[in-house]
Length: 400
Image 1: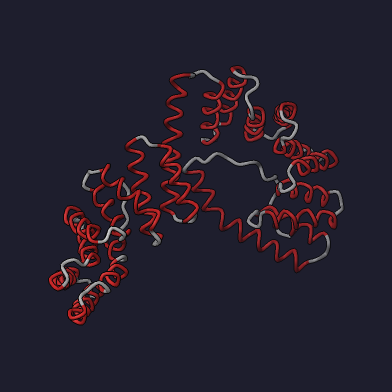
Image 2: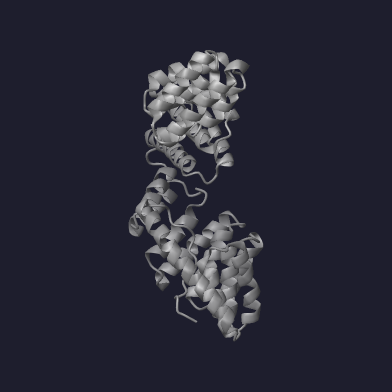
């Protein structure tokens, strides 16, 4: 079970809670309550939680029904890892004020760490829709996903993940939970597939994809061919096999084999823009610019927002001596995908052809900056064996 820093998370909720409770204090004790609160606040700033706890206890002596003070005491117990005491204090808090949603969330998180998953599930499900603080929301959501995983409630886990991704799309913890949950689902599905259809086309396709991740292209090609033997109509298999063949070699024999696969993919699905684009890449490798122009154009007709096809058209038109026409396609590619380094590379080449040295220098610098920034990302992807994406074209990176 993943757990962020309990101190940071718990103490970050204290001050909001205390102000809610102070309003309920008896008027004749309000000043004394305020003094104890200020001392508790100073103690927390000085990293003296035991002093803060004494001050909160004094506040309870003055106002025994103050739900927020109980919640603060629960937060302090949670921060030091005393989940039994934390649960007791949070129970007291919500007994007096059930709408203290942060206290409900912390109670659920405490119950989970005490091994009481069903109780934790109840409190977390109640509180989560009401939480506003993103860090607490993510931790409570993460704990609830962990419970769903333990209880086999995969549908609930996926629904919750989607909600958390909408609220906090860039939160690393949410993304990690998504990775773990979807990986677990994938592993479960794979285990079932191995049991029910160990020699199916899909099983061989998965083996091929795994081998592609490991850069074992001959092994991947063999598995793709076995997949085709098992199921000749398997959707997408010809395209994947064509990519594997080109990844293994770009000599003419490999090009011919890959070309047949992409053509077969298009015969099965005439709207397959990716296969049409790959045919353009093969024509480009052969310096058959007219065929490449036709293939890239068809790919773009099939998918108007296809940045790679725009790059293909741009580089071909530049090679054919039409840099002004190329420029429009390359500018569209950079607009569609500003982080695509090859769009900036080919823009630099085209601007150089047009004699626009300053623009060429700007695009070259953008290309270099993107390439340098993306190198660590590429290495990381290789380490975790991410499946390769579509080829981006094979221009050599030489300075304009």
